Length: 161
Image (cartoon, rainbow, N blue to C red; front, side, top):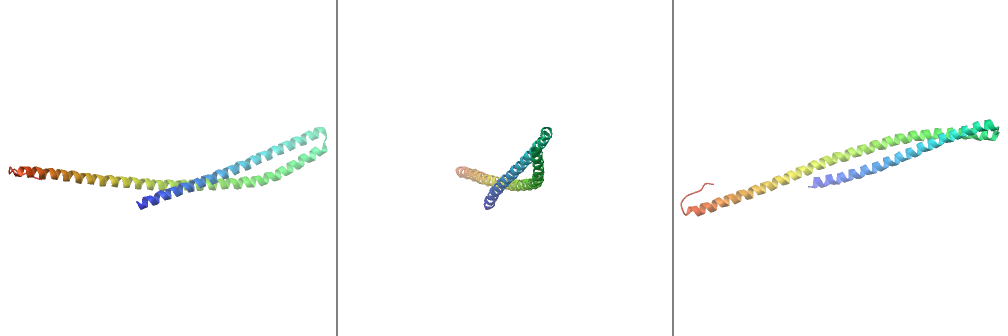
């Protein structure tokens, strides 16, 4: 029984660890999505800057051309930084996903052992109950035979046990 309690406690601990790893993985995925969204916004910024340069070529606005060129330069710098962060975040998500899956496997292994112990304990309890019932039945049967022998002993006809 002590082993079963310990295993149940271990199962609870594994479940809590799995939940923590799942939460960490979900946070890492959210961070990756946030970075990818920033990268998409940055691409949109480059597209708008190029459109500004194209329109300035038609209108002759020199300042718009300079602003568009600077926006493109800054967006390209931001894209390089974001690309490294996205790459790092993807690795982090993969690592946390693997940790989560490892904890899930550990929890399931402990649950399997715990269930096997419960089955074994239940089988042992059923066996003991059956032994008690068998002993009770034998004692009742033997008592009935003794009473019958006692009743028949007066008539001198013995019964066998």
